Image 1 (cartoon, rainbow, N blue to C red):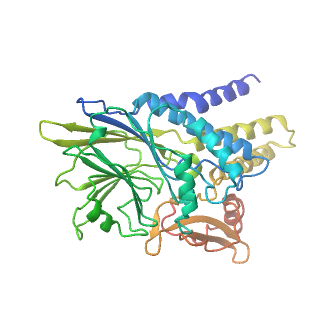
Image 2 (spheres, rainbow, N blue to C red):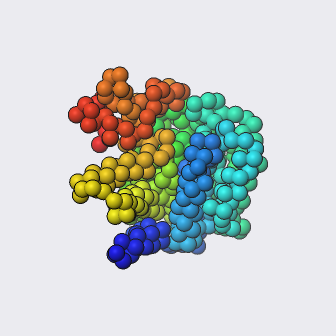
Image 3 (tube, rainbow, N blue to C red):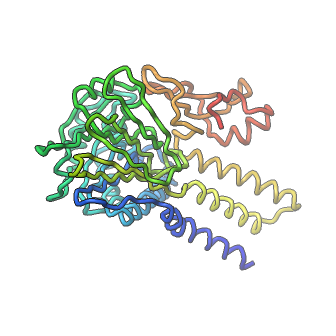
Length: 422
């Protein structure tokens, strides 16, 4: 009987502490090679869980667990990289458009606790903060965001003084000059929540022509990519997915080099993706050849889903052991059904979850994403629903676990599953 409590304790120690150190051991962090070196930690799409779309009973627990995961990952990233600057690439809140003033105050307090650091920070907004995806960008929310998040910069830093820093909001076409440099040569750096490499709300080519960027940092799609953008219209964009890549990539930027766009994944497991982490870029300048180089890596974290699934399985085993059943077959059946239901609930905890939900299915009036599968009792199969940036296609939503426990046993098939389903 002592074995089960020992297993539970070991699972908690691993899930809550040791796995962070295990994954940290795989991080490859570029070290300074010259006196003009700037380390930038990139935080993308934390989307702190709000108060309105969480269960009234479980909300405090889900917010606590999500905040704790973000905080521990962030503290490990800061300790490992010792950055000179931290950049937040938008979607800091999950309910920035609808939260009350009191809820915003609570969320800001949580944000300060989660991302507690005295290192200089630069913030830009995302569609969940100020609008822009399913509704227009709202000017009063933009003003509120700038008041809530004040930028700070490193003091007397050689390379930072060579940066020209701008924010581009591709959802409304607004450009904000954050910092300008009088040094030559200088590096034109653009911060954008929405990536330039994919077709979106405004033609990114116009901004490339006007602003002449050398380096772009972006987020939004919850995945890691490296994009090489041409400086002239008409040439092809070269994009490479960077998921689960641990080795840093080194690039030369500026001058006649292609524009480099580094897209950082989300750091929150509540966005429904298994691969989460923080970006780290080291920018260096060589006075000998007057060249800028950028080394980029992603500090991948262990998926929180695996720990939660393990806890759910152990809970099911505990119930099987403690609750009397007439036959062993009933015990096995209960454990199987309980585990499947709990796993599906864990995976489907966020309303935006679906396998490959951030893979664009089509472009054109906004990206179209696979949103969810729901059981349709009338048709007797699982319907597919999409999010196209304007509305959800379909409204009889049921949780994904109903497709696992109801759709397949009833129909003997999964229903209408497009080829993006793994």
